[in-house]
Image 1: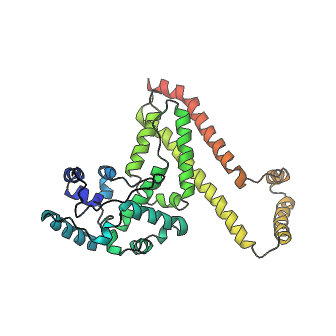
Image 2: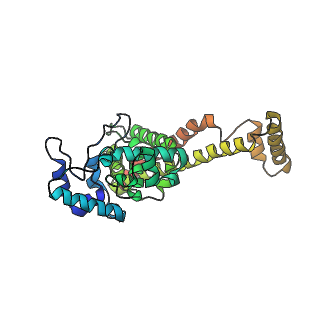
Length: 316
């Protein structure tokens, strides 16, 4: 399948012409794509025109560039026969395999050789579909963003923003590596653009200018990302403690915890924390995680709702 690097390098018009071929013909650069399971967000070819230029023009792998040059020459001669192994793959399959590896081992485990091994393919076969590891990483993030795809606006801005925030949180927890990794990638994928369009649409009719609307959306997004980071920190702490105490009996583990809490009690420095302990409050309890997230989100939405009349008057 044509990568966005080739698409923007040779011209989007030619790419769209290739897409319009009748009869199911497959070009040398565009082998057939395997069917996508309906529950999986696909890597959509029609997204090609919506990658930001600073991503699309990033240099790819030199060997892959030579391979694509040969493919272009074949196409000029009317040949349509990509290597059999490359034809058996699809870009969607490659990206989903990379996400599975990242989910199991972290994003640092993803490289072209590893994904080829997972798919039982040669490494160079991947380059018929993905220009470089950087492109693969961008596609992975875009698929995860697509898992939290914002629906068409319902007319209830608060319900829409709440649903979108919860969907984003769920997607980030399904892929624990993504929230930290996203900070290293430019936020410019096609599915991010689609989500932003729908989020902005949810605020139509409120009388806000777009700068204010973007600031509101940024506040919600920032809350979600911060909450997910905090929740993952809590979960990491649980795993760390489980590993630390794995060789201790339950009685020994409770003795260690009692010793620590007793030091807090007797120090005299933390009276409010002692009161919290006395009430049996665990601020990091997994069973209250959803409740705590929704409480904070509702507080934020309440604050936005309370400011809407003021913001509308200021812009009138």
